[in-house]
Length: 232
Image (cartoon, rainbow, N blue to C red):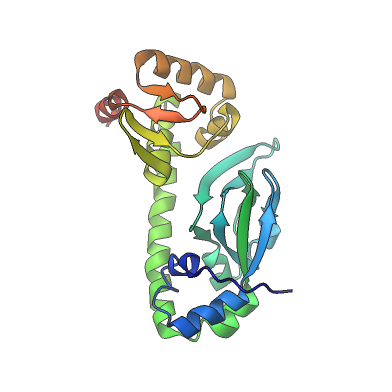
């Protein structure tokens, strides 16, 4: 059964919905199914991702590719107001990733059928989708660049920098990465071993490049940005 969504702010964060009239926005809200997921629960399997786009109403989700060894290779993490899957709705192909709740989350799902029936006839939406896809392409290039670094240290520095761009909160001591990742998840993100990540994080902390806060978040200090500048 569909649930009516009264919070327009999520819809307005999707670029190709932002230009809709109030009546059109209400119509889109009525098409979206809102579901709750607990931490580490699968939101969409890889084979299901061609059928839906999703919007994050609360919490965070991680987009992962499963390796042949059964490990998660993290592609990105989406938080409140983020959305994903619009490309699969356009070309009907499966996105090469599985969506997992990184913490308890509420997700809105828009089906391919509803998207095509009610939205693709809107020319303004189509133009904005093209702009959005260009942004997604730049995002993919950023990840390719990270994985292209030869050294594990460069990869970790690049990943931390990327995480602060997407989830950073300014603090007196620097920038706090407002998403918690285990050492294994960071290892999956950077394609190195967990032991390597643990060793480098300890060294970074000793060098003053990062600090671990009382709630186990990572704070990037001024020394981090000096180090990053030297590496570029």
